[in-house]
Image (tube, rainbow, N blue to C red; front, side, top):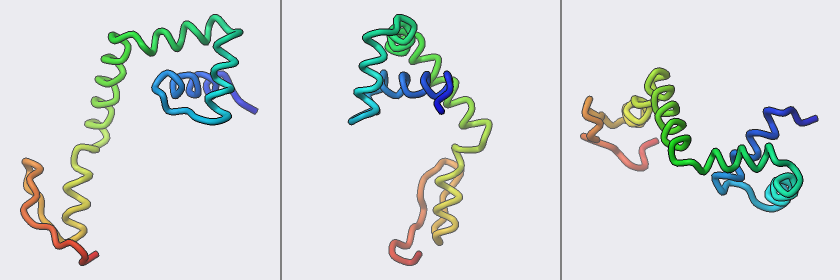
Length: 95
């Protein structure tokens, strides 16, 4: 059973061009009959909303430490990445 949140996420994915096949067709049918769905998709295309979402996602990634994931992976693979993010050494094929 899909929730309102699931429906909204699917419509957002449609607005981003991330759906295909049956999911895309389902979203298109919904847009034909549901004015609230059309409004949500229109809002997702608004450049101000896109900018706000990008900023919010970046902020959440920074709080979660996502900006250091690549460094941690390189170190784990036997390379070393400096704080600037510059890869100093990466031994390919030695995983």
